[in-house]
Length: 162
Image (cartoon, rainbow, N blue to C red; front, side, top):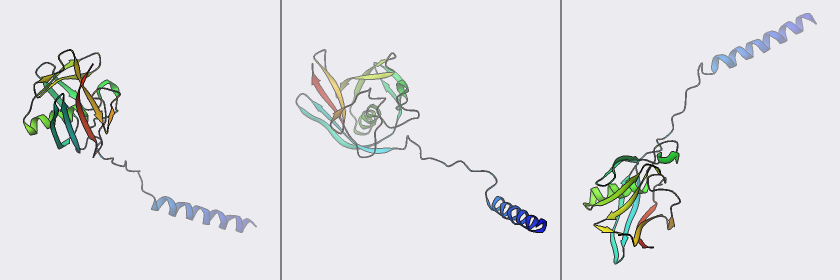
């Protein structure tokens, strides 16, 4: 009986040793894809008299500079909306303007950590309208530097009367 117990202990110890020897010594962290990877979206700008711009734009979150608002990050981390940088509607507008050679301007509001889009293609709301931002047909519930875009999204900036 003493010999059987010793054999059992030996077999269990040997099996455990083999299992530990075949396991990696240190678990390697898994890499995750960047959340700020460029995505292709469709950007549409509609003024009071119709379509001002429509095109596919490759974008990701980045610093944005406007004449009125200065340079600020616009990467989805604004206001703590996302834990890491992501593509955003305002960054997409900025990329569209640079790539398709039109202007836009916006006021920076530090209290919101975001821009207000005031003018696109020299068209301003002028106190009677504003630029509404919608993604896939729904107005976004946060600022344009806070909302996360996904590949294939349809981003619309629409001149909207009060």
